[in-house]
Length: 108
Image (cartoon, rainbow, N blue to C red; front, side, top):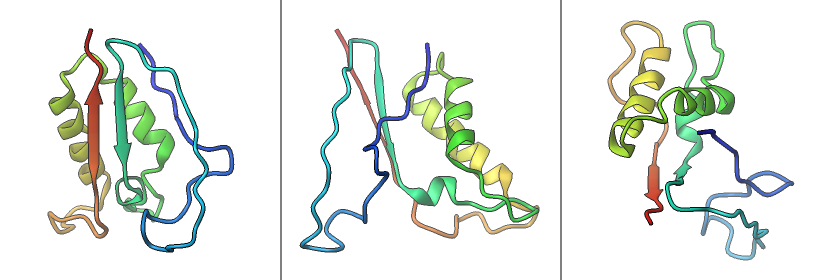
């Protein structure tokens, strides 16, 4: 019934494979049956609104938290819809940066 951020303490690193010699920090988080792991790229939360403010990671968490009762495919669609609605009127349908959402449902 809650959304938690799972990330390394020092924050995200570069995109996987971008810098071959980069050493990534591993992190772990206990998951249980009924949990969903959502992975996303920064193209989702860096979308700017009418005043230039980014949608932001906190807003992504709040949006996801308010839709936890939805099946995962609808949750992903809702996130994309909210991000697109954040942009100024008349903005192109496509988002300005690449967006990737991957969800994994842990079932009993």
